[in-house]
Image (tube, rainbow, N blue to C red):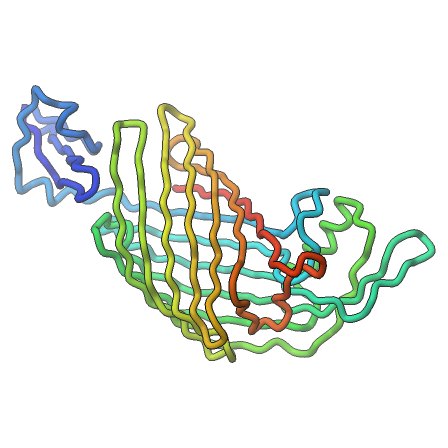
Amino acid sequence: MIVILGFISFSTFAAEMAVSSADNIIWVNTKVLKSEVPDVILKADPRAKDIPPDAYYEVSIGIHNDNVGKIRSGDDRGRTYGHYLHAAVITSKGIRFSFKYDEDLYTKNAQPRVLRSDGLYDTTQLTTAERVMKFVVSTREQGQLLYYTGALGWQQLDPSGSGPTADMQHEFHKLVKASRQTINVDGGSPKNSLLAEAAIGVQAEYRVNNDLKLKGNVEVGVSYSTAKDASSLNLKGEGAIEYKPNYFGFKLSAGVETKVFDMGVNYAPYVGADVLFGEKTSCGVRATKSMGDTMNYQLYNVPNVTSGEMDIMYTAGCTRKF
């Protein structure tokens, strides 16, 4: 049997094995450590480079909030409700083309709450709904040491007090039987801006064995927006451990996202946990804590009125490959 070495990863020392059914040869598209096939002679073959990985699609959806159910971890002020929808196609050359839509609600009390006869409180609040839609191109899926990302998009700051995230807050309060009802002040018409992003990153992966992988990446980039005070220099870093002995597996991650902007520096450390279902589906949660200087071009990105600190943001989402 002739076994063909497709490539060797810089971080895993793993080989992309490829063998063809022609001439009694079998093609295998799986990464195998050399130490796991001591009885096989690895031989290079120029045909290996002509076998690209399959292209696939990916969809991610999720929501986030500063409260979890009836646990009042946050005060529904500042950055609070939000959701996202991301869709991507990854080509056989490892280029990811993505469409991303994110929306976040920022709120601040406009006046003291009023107790009603039915025992509920009417809370009048100022709001800004930030909506970002962008198209992203990235080479990260190629698995090289260096990768590049670029994006162009549209950003909207909507103070009208209406829209999906405002409705989301209202329905959530009904669901958990919150002790107050919110009244949103109409702050005027939405303001639209253009957005451009660029970044370069370094990534590594080490495969301990067939079940356990360690991953890490560091990325530096810039985000430019025509909206006032919304541009920043960005630095991101993340480490993760992934364990998948069978159909089910898990991934634990931790990282920090840093933004340098006109008024200072903001740090946002986070931890995350994901459950893996087969090779195509994952669902997980993340907790993020904003620290340092506050980037407040949304006007109402304010701290908790009691603690004086930014609330922890909890995110839950799922990703599916097709």
